[in-house]
Image (tube, rainbow, N blue to C red; front, top):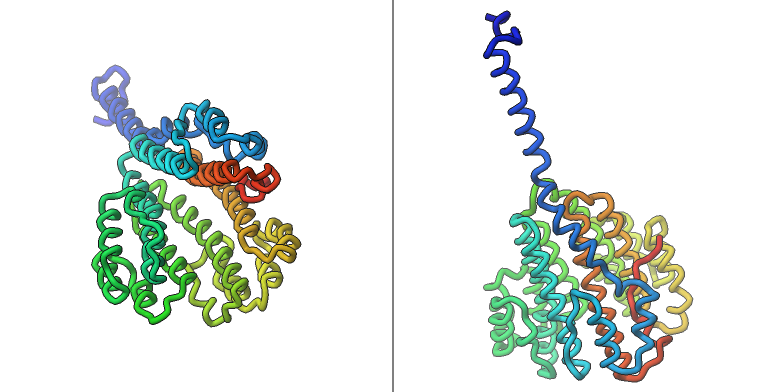
Length: 373
């Protein structure tokens, strides 16, 4: 029987060969199929690019003296169609562009990535909910965020917050699955605004960790989250030290271990008595050089805002590296998504600067560009 199977002139031999080829082919298809689904979206996002993170392009935009000239320059690009005649209407148009881009990314990506983009859209709405809550706590009604909400559930929540009181708001948020820590902070007689920022970040990170993505993307997603944690930990602690928060309060700001900010380093940062020594505690991370370079300016201006720009630039570089390491799956998508957010932020800053007739030199320090190292 064995001789017959191994005989090239036997039909059984060719059936065996065919079976082996079928198994090998099935294995190859199974291995490559998850990667094939990312070829088109990644190529599309790479082709679109993010020109408004490039210093030279930003300089050209900042030199414009009219909003019409600004719009004409931006609208040359195929994925922009900025409208409006005032600062607020143009900025609103830019927000809509970001939303349209994220929906486009969601539709072009594999179905198993759709929930990830939905969580990311929630993050933008979180900002509106957070600000609505802060206004309510401060007894202010200066601005309504209802019309800016992306998701229907957010519009419903914002409307209910607007009609709630400080006493009823915690129970309302609990019904929308907000974390206990946030609800407890809001229940205090004098809630801390920085703590509210941090607890909203925790809420977003928790949801991002829990959201399902394709199996070959899970590690990349977790690495991305750790890079986000690094950025947020540094930003929050810089603000806390600037406001002279004591170490015991700073310890409550831990969001989990990041890619570079492990718990032991976080504890060193917490114990730093001032911002210069906090920056020293970051030595050994890729953020140290940029933060050190901004220290002199902080000494003169006493504003942590300037640190945020260099932190964001370094964060973009980390996401770029993550993209190159995971170019077959969601790496390029993550880079395009994050970069698009900062592009829109840059454009909104330039619009405001042009309207206020600020010079290019005054606008540029408020813009984010990708760090070179």
